[in-house]
Image (tube, rainbow, N blue to C red; front, side, top):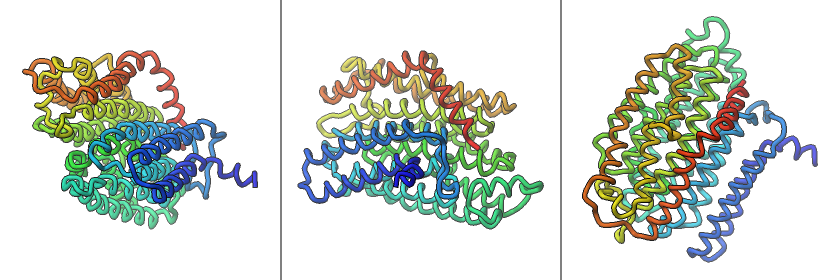
Length: 483
């Protein structure tokens, strides 16, 4: 018995989350549904995430299970901790807001746990079947949470759009996987890598078309242009805490899956997939930067910001190698903090009628709530990549591998897109500090949001520069483990 438990120990974090979700689902189904009980389930869900994180830290030597379909290595552990941090942060943001909206149901934390389990399987996928299983477990749960406010037309519309376009992308991904299987005769990443390393494999049409369709499916998950169409509508229509979740954890997991796929399954055809990555990166950076300029809804603006950020994260991946993977990991780690902090500020923008999403309603916020205005300004500066905030270091580590790989023009386009993107971030700062003040937001919510946001500002601007070395080293170790 002990030998069996030791053999499957790498699965312990996923087992903890899935069993936790099942227990909480039964508790919610058989106990009276009220705010107190639902709050208890949410706290228990957070405890499950913490337990899974502890289990990851305590894991022993790297291992592969089920014939290499499940990979437990330093890369998987690093990304899983990021996913758990993103999911936990989004759950904390969801507490008060979902209560205020009247959509605080016990199903929400259960679905978020199941989505997190799917993300963790994605991160450890070493086989096309494991890849698809994790991807769909995540996606099916997210389709439901996007439409969890059934009495809200916008939320229902967001869930329907996400589902329809997600099903289309899943079909493309499956078609690409079938073509790769037809090419290699196996679904394992190691087997595909061996077949793709044969001389002349890059000219094989099954491999080329399979690669294209597989990348299309994954590009949808990371909101890369031109497969970003769902992002602004879903971000705007979904409840704001759910939007925060969608913007954080799933993006990290999908980006990590993309990194593992190209680095471990397709290293022999890097020129082929590099062209696709470069196109996705340039299109995402440019469209994300230009598309946000005319936005008046702050959630739609954050959607285009997310699209641009995924473009920046793809830049080091285009460079390839361990240093490129390290750049992706560092960027995504900082991206989670920036995104959750910005949404924490957005969730503090509440008046008696509900959340305020119009950017112009931030006018004069510095006069009515200086702390919140300062915190949001710091996040905007960080997203714009202005030193010495963390966003600057994120872009530095994103563009550096591209420069070292000789992709100077790609780095230049990224810098130009960052300068263009700075316009709409700085516009928000200008509105908050220089426009005539509008009616103040609800004092209690704004105060709580300001405290949380300011704590993250300290991390972003004043703590991270001093602890960047451990993050860089951990990301480097994780990237080096990709084989």
